[in-house]
Amino acid sequence: MGKGPQTSPRKGGSKERPEGLHPRNRHQGRYDFPALVQCCPELATFVAPNPYGDLSIDFANPRAVRALNKALLVHYYGVEGWEIPAEYLCPPIPGRADYIHQLADLLASGNGGKVPEGRSIRVLDIGTGANCIYPILGNREYGWSYVGTDIDPRALASARRVLQANPGLCEAVELRQQPSPDRIFSGVVQPGEGFHLSMCNPPFHASAAEAREGTQRKWRNLGREVPGKKAPTLNFGGQGAELWCPGGEGAFLRRMIEESADLPRLCLWFTALVSKSATLPGLQAALRKVGALEVQTIEMAQGQKKSRILAWSFLDRQGRQVSG
Image (cartoon, rainbow, N blue to C red; front, top):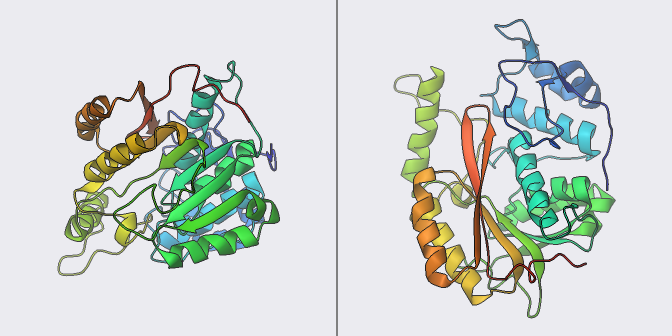
């Protein structure tokens, strides 16, 4: 469904090549910058030889990464008009695509080994953000339909502009504002509604101060920190609820687990990214406490970055079978 252009702007090998990507992930190998610039001329401003002699961009430059994302979305997925406000989270598309492909495999396990495609597959994206990246990728790869939720009306307005620039997406993705920052499913899920999957990239940090320190630490690691000056925003950007909540990802996901137990038939699979491996034991204990029947941890890697998907269900094997 919706596979988009088939030419590949990644080839060969590079120091910047994401390793460990899912076999169906389009973003294998090295970025073919001439092809990407042809799709998105504004990217040309940021492309130059790196120390290895390959064409590249400065991945610490937010404007460069936004232009790269825009080019990738046009070239691979036929998505036009992807723009986000400068201060909002700019997602790494290869890694975000991996989450989608791993969830497709999870659904395939309840569909005779075949990945289910089409609008009848419904996905709930918690915290869809200004970038709306998961609904975009999930629809373009597999034709799935989405409900994307967020507490930030400005983020939803940005996501809506992208959808409206792409009629197929506009029809497949519904956006809803979560009225309560303390709730995850209630307030946005309608009575009797059901989904095959829920997905979420939870806020990582426990406070705004911790988020700032994280940015400064990354700049120190890059050798870019200037004494006495505020660290610039890194390529991923992000603000407020995108980056932090009281208690960080552990507290957020424990709240998600508790709410999911109150709505056990809402999804065949509830899922979330978990950045910190140390968070997993507490989450697994919480899932045992609420009686989840199936719990899986799916490891992912892009280069040196490691993350994992925590997936759980309150349904037995028969209940997890996919039906349109």
